[in-house]
Length: 68
Image (cartoon, rainbow, N blue to C red; front, side):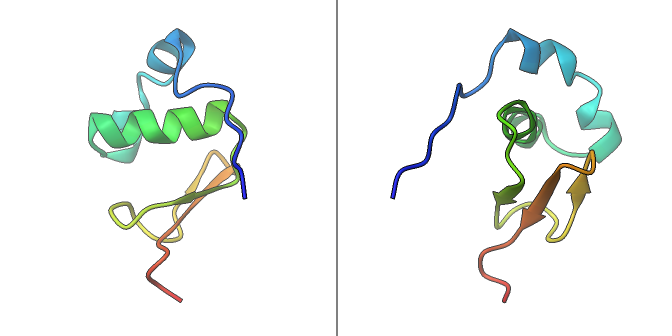
């Protein structure tokens, strides 16, 4: 199984989502992960550290892989 990704993050990610940490109350590193996922048109982001079920911009849903 392979997963394609256009980029990890770009300058647009860093500039365009600069308000995301404030809106989400998250850490900067998590914000970069979220911004990169949005930039790459991901629908699901699997994370054990972020809030399970959180829906971001009606595009990205955070899912904890350890919760069934």
